[in-house]
Length: 616
Image (tube, rainbow, N blue to C red; front, side, top):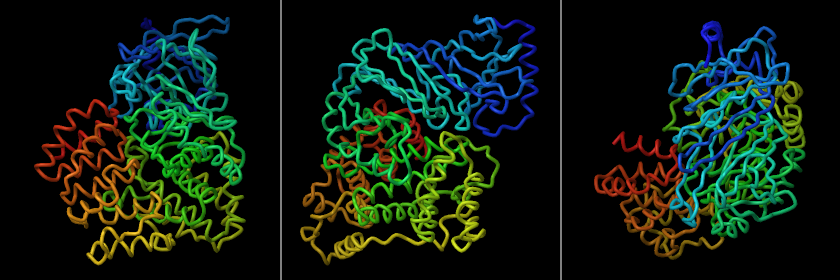
């Protein structure tokens, strides 16, 4: 237990720190004083109590020689005790205190130290409802035989399963030993021994420094299939063959990205296809990308999702936004790189289709986004809750459009080495927009001032919407789709005469986006009968068809119900429930369905859907 003297010392430290501004307001950590250089986790997974328990050992690099406190981020962690490694090589108890709970940030763990120890250990266990962890019953998995657990640490949820400096400004290497029940495999965003049995615990090592949000774990009934010399996929047994087939082009994607932006620096690129409740499309955890099963379409038509997560190996993982205010440095860059990978593999016409669709969806989203949040970088104080930095999608397409504008004006012979230089010169570092702008001026604009003036640069970074100077993508293939769509909506083209034989998934997505809210129930019924859209194995197509059908009043409850019971991706689930709540009849049906489906969704998705029901 903390002594009265140590509590007074900790309180003094607390009062002294309170007046000092944080570089990252979403973290309590004073990483200007001390930084974590390495993390070791020794944890036991208990599915009965839905907890991880054990200790976290942090290796520390003290920057301020006068500092006598280590401040870590936590959320809903039960701290048992804290130890520090003394100069004599022995562990000794340390005094600590937990701050008052803040809804968005959790609680600061303040550890008082008389000296500056090289290492500290925190013994703890997580809460059953830890924000980063989803514990699934056997009934929620494909086989129904064994439970499953996975993490989602982005943006600031790593602190709910480990006490650490939970800010992208701090990077650290890590290792782990995880005990799990027999019959379950543990994988992490680290070096995974493909031949390990778990005897004596599952062991991991991540040699490259990462920020806390890329700390990841999954435990379940998993099988492995090799895809290439440095790539493989993990999935539940019933899904492994389909996953391996869908991801067969992974090695080609790695090679395409390397040809553009330099060597892949993470040794292996493995993936895990998670259960359907995974709330997002993918999470770029280094060495082990987490993927939604909704990308398995049976025709490799949605592999641009893999290209996006792979692109993060350069933008986001290699060069990381220093705080979530600079999120566009992760996602805007990655979206741009994704298009270049797709173009390299599948051709310029396919890439142009994706670009136009991306830009159309950007403009469609603008009315829902407050003008103050349409900038890539807000001039407002950096004090918003974590979710609001990442809840609008403009960082993806607007950031990519900004980079594409520079590329179009400079030419690829100039722009490609410029962008590769950004990755090379800032590898394994965290960066701000100001750092990128300084790099941009020095390495591109100073030598080519005609490419972009200061006023336009300011408009891209801080302005509302998209600058008028932005050149929109125009796909001839989508223009042909548009001609058929217009004729069909007017009744001048019969449904049976729509020529879609050569359409790829993005052409169908474009078509369905544009008829949503315009087509009648009768027209949607004909589409369904002609093309079987209600039973599409492509979830992107099925989602858009269901959304258009709900808006038109076409009854798709049977397949829609199955969809909402089996798919937990937030991008699909939230808009569909939102549309269903518009009419009393649909609302009653949706309410009954959600009562059954809710337990299948990730807590993040549950919270988003709950808000929609509360609004209505």
